[in-house]
Amino acid sequence: MNDAVPPKAWLTALLLCCFAGGFGAHRFYVGRIGTGVAQLVTLGGCGVWLLIDLVMILRGTFTDAQGRPLQKS
Image (cartoon, rainbow, N blue to C red; front, side, top):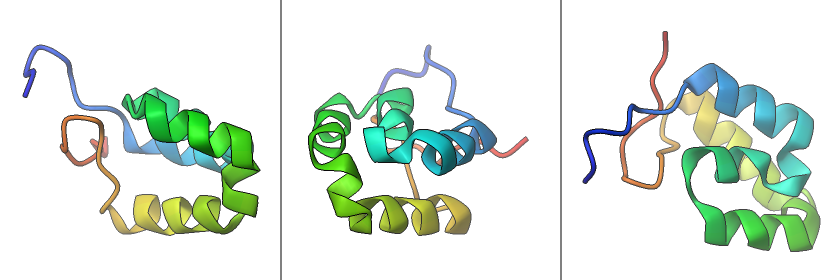
C-alpha cells in the first residue's frame, strides 16, 4: 500500500459515477484503470455494472486501487 497517496473522495466518485459512469470515469478516478477501460468499452456493462458500482459507492463499500474505502468529508 502506498500511504503517500491520499484516499479518494467519496462525493467525487459518486458524482463521476452518476454523470460519467457509463464511461468508467469513477473507476479511472480511484485508480482502477483496467476495469475503467472495460467499463468504457462496454458502456458500464450495458448499465448493470454501473448500477452495481453506484450502489457500492452509496453503501460505502467501493474501494480505491489500494483497497482503501473512499473518504467521506
